[in-house]
Every structure is written in structure tokens, then in C-alpha cells.
Amino acid sequence: MKKQIKLKVNGVEYEMWIKPYVREEIGLVGTKKGCDKGECGACTVIMNGEAILSCLVLAIQCQGKEISTIEGLAQDGNLDPLQEAFVRQGAIQCGFCTPGMIMASRALLNKNPHPSEEENKRGMV
Image 1 (tube, rainbow, N blue to C red):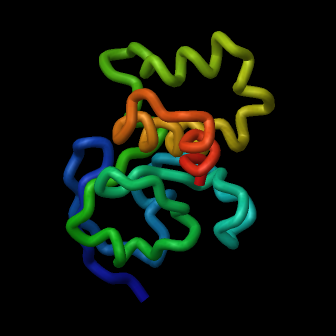
Image 2: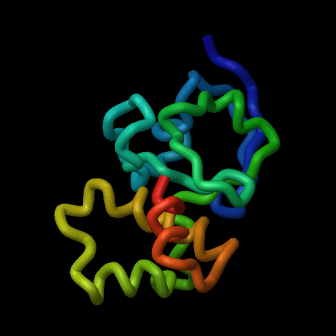
């Protein structure tokens, strides 16, 4: 059963009738579906400034919220400095969980630009 929702993803407002999942509806597939149980972090996005595990959130819960995905970090064709750092340090590995790791890191750094090692560990959803 589809429901109508309004949400803002990467600065673009959408109004749509959707099934419980947004990924295929708007074509942003950079966020990966991993464990589907909230354990791995591959699906991490930022919703209203907080890192969340998107596999645990139904689209209807996003009504009126602002969501940022990995696709929204690059601006004007330039990678976000955090994305550049992951590439430069070889932290991209196979790339499957990388978008989630970057989004969790971005949420942490947006709140605290100079986190301690302990804050870094806790900030990775």
C-alpha cells in the first residue's frame, strides 16, 4: 500500500506516493542495504543532522524531515573533504560500506569538528 509523503533529500523537495522504502523511488542508490537489522551501518544517512540507520526507518517516518545521502555530499562536482580523505588514505576498500562510514563521520564532524578518539569510536553508528 502506497502512502503520500513530503521530504527533502540532498536539498531537493519531493512529494510522492511511495511504498515503505525510498531508495528506488528517487533513484539514489549510493546508500547500501546491508544487514537490514541495524547492525552494520552500511545504510547510514543523515536525517535532520543525526546519523541514522536507514534500514530501521520507514519512509513514512521521514515525512517533513531533511535527509542527506552520500550523493549529496559532493558539491559542484567536487568531493566533500571527508570523501577526499577516505580516498587519499585508501579507506574505500571494496566500497560497499564506505558510504555509510562517510555519512556517520560527516554527522559527527558536523557536530564536533575536533572529536577525541573515544568520540570518533562512538560516532561511528
